[in-house]
Amino acid sequence: MSNSETCETCDPGQNDGDGTREVIKVPVENVLDPSTFIPPSALPGPGVVIEFCNRCRWLHRATWVQTELFLTFPPPTLGSITVIPYDSAETGGRFRVWLAVERNSTPELIWDRKTQGGFPELKDLKQRIRDKIAPGTSLGHSDKHPVTQP
Image (cartoon, rainbow, N blue to C red; front, side):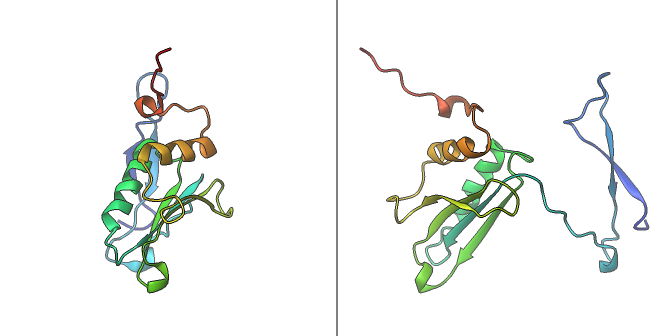
């Protein structure tokens, strides 16, 4: 295939009203020719950055949080999640979650393990992010508060 050819894929989110899916044309690159590679475009919407201490072996926790956030806030609600490992004495014990509400905006600290006394409960982290990027959106069962008896 040349770089001018396209591949047809179905977008399950689009519907023409008659039950059929809209066909989206996606450029195809020659996987063996780097000159045809198409750089990724910046995704629209908010982005999250997860910084973690690699010395503490928190990669699995960071990727688990990343996966849970993408499952809860799929694109375009969250445009990207970046995971950054640190491996120095100055960043020892670090686990921070940052949120940039708009693309190219300055990220806001959502969670810091050291100042907030531990790792975030996923429910709390999701609520904090939701309140910034999709207020009013239900998080389902994790959003419900316990009923108190009088």
